[in-house]
Image: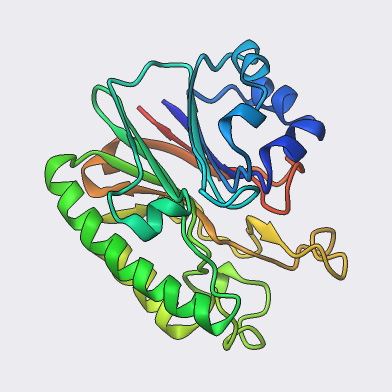
Length: 253
């Protein structure tokens, strides 16, 4: 199974930049989208179906033009769960999960902490999400949580760890949280295969950051430990340029 995660920073904008042609060429079995910034009636579902994805599940934020996640699949899931049941998360459209026969795949959009109010919100989200996943893993041991975590894990995952040490997304408390999250039963699938530096999934639109590869690795496909022996490949796809993020991919046998 080939799984891709992609923060598209507006699905309609991404489609206008050739996203659907790219999707057909990349041909994942399942793609998890974040920050779709649209309601379902604003999305060209027939064009998405024509691109090979008849099974489409959108979970939009209540606030229009904001946040939102989706899962597009070639395979019909046996169950789809919209949200977590935690109201403040679900108001912002941050989690959707599709359960298949032997694996469940979640698309996650974790909040950023761009100001102090949102930073507190992010910390609350991280704590509540950890508790939610702890319970979910008991019910569903084979779990892949794909998405934009808005956190760089280690210094290797950011172009300038010293200057960014006090910036949300690389704060010690955020890094400690994602470290605990992984150590509590998840594999960073990209790092499972690749230990090299200068691999990023997001670049600022400022100062020609992408062309200079001054980026952050904040998008992950985290696989639960029972899937370890089924991991066959995990890569970042920086050539896809429909967003300020790029896709990340994992394959399972």
